[in-house]
Image (cartoon, rainbow, N blue to C red):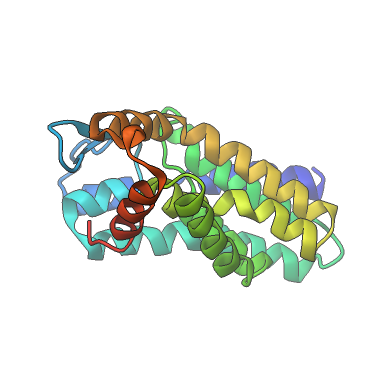
Length: 226
């Protein structure tokens, strides 16, 4: 088996380990956490999150368990990516394994392909690939989400999309392809969340507000405690 093939297979299987389910086993007696509901402010509607991730655990078991899952999900990408980067510095295998881990996290083979969105795994991968990409993408994503979309959801989740121009500016084509690949995985996994965001905005009447009002609401919501 070639190095890249091993990175793909090994990374996917590692990514398929569901630490959120492990946490739910101990913290929640194995309760089903695949559907999580959140209140939509100012309405009687519910935002329905369908997935198994740190978000699912944190909502039910508290922030300590949620943070533990975030750290473990980040490590399962960081460790193989950094290991391959150190062992094979002339190979792009570390980028390949990072993508494979994220794919496994989102579509875990052990759990009927129902996983999370991959943010924690992506952060872990970026710790091994380019640490500066994390704050750069997060800040740029927040600005774009607030100013362009006037959306708290987009401001908090737009970061991965900004990795593409970041790597186009600071690195070469392999990194750009990495950014494109993780964005394809991330946004496919997030398609249900995008639908929930549109439904919530409709229920709140956001579209009928003028731009300054939408921006003020998004700005205050971004810094509000959930």
